[in-house]
Length: 360
Image 1 (cartoon, rainbow, N blue to C red):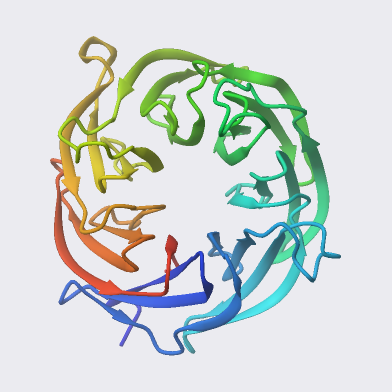
Image 2: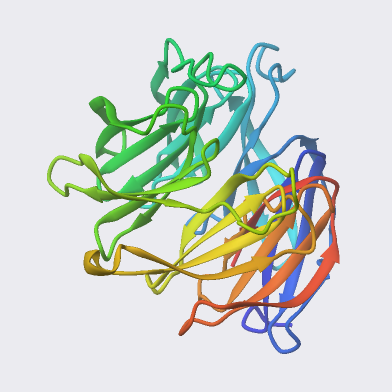
């Protein structure tokens, strides 16, 4: 079967190894791919795919990985061979901190930005042809905002996100975004240690970049809000335009809600976020300032309660959603005109899935 007839995805999470899943475009059904599951370490909770080198980069969300002198989490590189449906580990290095939660690769210079949630540290590595090379930056944030006594007594860096030459590092523990400028494949400069401060106790988790409107959408985990931010394209500065509450009003009584993933549709017209607790994907249309920036279009109830880091296919027609507690992957149809979601298929997968990554 040709690559034009199916799409392949990598699934991993709070278990051991990876699962490979195929989406058959003709039938719109999911199926376990050949050579799945793939052996690997535990807690491969976030990954990115570099199509130029056919390499998957994954973080190992542990405090003490045995191959990093037992003091840090880890970052690994895996070679993907689509003709064999095989994934082989090539390299592993320290994540430069405990409990890494996120890795992002800049599409222009190949840099890998690793967010160590547990340690409150950021590490930036250069890459060459799928190989992890030099450590370019290692930063530790000294303390959290201490507004939320359960989650913010220390810094907890949760992810890095890119707009042109700027990198925005989101810290849940400090209610802050740190701004950096990438000046070359092997160079990073700090622009502003605190480039943006969210409302105290908000707990910023992830950021979605809207290139077309020069905006960013900040998902706050602890206060159930999305902050609409304007991006200064010269300085990289962020300024608040609006705050939207994404909490589901008719959720199961007493159930707390926590945002997880947030993405802009490839056509730039819609914003999606996953909401854990009652289990939903919240859909907004992206609007001009005169219409308050975001308009709620749909609250799609998932089969489970804990949807994590979903992915929208590059063609914009499908969404794959892992549910950490139900151990399933849901396949949703995405209407590029209306943004509306509908269920096409679901299948069981590895235990506690947290991330789905498209491989072709």
